[in-house]
Length: 460
Image 1 (cartoon, helix red, strand yellow):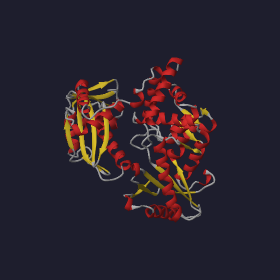
Image 2: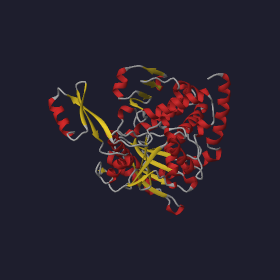
Image 3: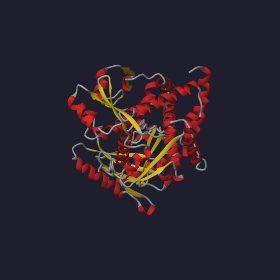
Image 4: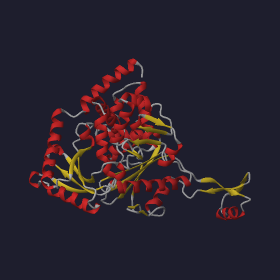
């Protein structure tokens, strides 16, 4: 970045930080809440169970309004895993003060943990049981390494870099690529922290990202990048960031190539022309969003198809992948009959699953189906029989081909078959049969989410 753009960028960073960095009062309130819960726990947990605050709060990289606190209860590794989980949940349940309006929730990750909802500032506190270990070779559960993450970053991140992490998180968040959840497949908070540490600053990270070439392996602990085919084979990934506290873990494992590509594109845009809008993304107001979405669909001259189906009251991490896979099966079915899907987006709203397709207008009444080589008798003969009522059979070089009527003339016909359960009736928790199909009709209540999906894929 040249000097002029760098000076402009610095002013933008300062402006953004004023809006996203927690105030002194907010920080003090969060720490106070954490200390109060720690004091309650200290009264009931055995002395050999160490209590430790981890996560972005402990590392001072949290954004304004992020009051979620992670407290680890570190058990002696001789305690059986089942007993550790049982005690962890029991301690969490015991310290809830219902008289103060606090609520308790049992959550599940690799093992069960407790979530407390405090009244102050809508603070959530996760109480996570784990083992106290001396090194990662003693790892018994995935969360056992988390205290090492906090220790490493608190020893290596400067105050300026902590603010740079906030800038990175906020930019990624507003472009919907922050978070390692399966629905997002983006950058985790820990990965953001490691990238800023490795490159030295937010701006240097953008400069590095603008020149990323795949495959890429970053080793923050050694401050170097490696080109070693064995590493990419080991982690089965072209984007590898080695955990400095566990060399056998790829911190970037959850980042999809699409999320990485989007970040590279944003970095190049910002470096070429620093603009505060690239931090905040394309915003919208509830009064304008429906108009913007309908205008976009009309201007694009595409047909919109919205499938609405019921989903069970389960974790979104369980249901969303099933809904996404369902949409991919339908899209693949459409492709078999010559239809091109320009946009395939899915989301969940309460107990409803949505699948949106944007498809070019038009009909496909006939298609040329190219079959096997005429010399493959066992394949060519069945192909010819399958198309015995075709308009005509042809030879394309040595391959047999048929000009035949398409089973579906329009995508609407195909999707009507879908909702009748003729293509895919059910996939695990997703029952597609009986779904509602809306053609070129986008209800106002869904416009906000559709806008976000379109914004993530396109620039509108």
